[in-house]
Amino acid sequence: MSIVAGRIDYRLLHGIVQSFWCPTYATKRTMIIDDAVANDEVRKAAMKMSKPSGQALSIINHETAYTNFKAGKYDGHTVFVIARDPQTFLDLIEQGQKVPVLTLGLTELPTDDTPGVQAGRRAFIKEEDIPVYQKIAAAGTRVEVRYMTTDKPVPISEYIPM
Image 1: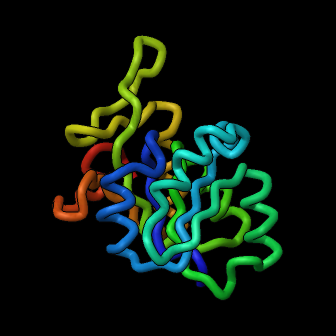
Image 2 (image 1 turned 30 degrees about the vertical axis):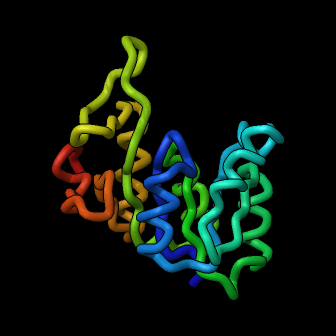
Image 3 (image 1 turned 180 degrees about the horizontal axis):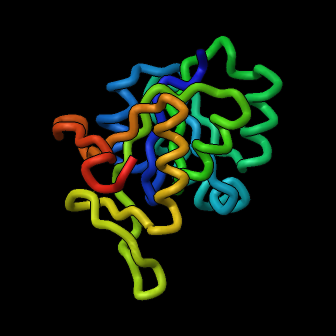
């Protein structure tokens, strides 16, 4: 198994993720899957400077991630995947990857154009993403809302029907 855990966080790699979440999972590789950052050398370089100590860091686009996982490139690794949206994780699952736990961390705030559900103090579930989360959970992934490692994990089923 290569993916140990996943996290949805719109800021991707930042202090809390680097200092708390990465050490919690003690993986060999932290992977950011994000097309915009992967194609922006300045943002990519900034994230590389905050790379978790002792871990490899990949900042790649969706297509590269899916191709590499499918080819077995990370089979000998333990990987912590961070992305902005749940569809990234559903795509990985539908391609045969197991994601044991997916944590919904910090998300962008809703707008008038994005109805949805508040999930804790720092997370928001867009209405359009509810079926995605339901499919992820149905595939056997434990989906929880949890900002910090010290917070009590709250099952996403507390906020949306499963």
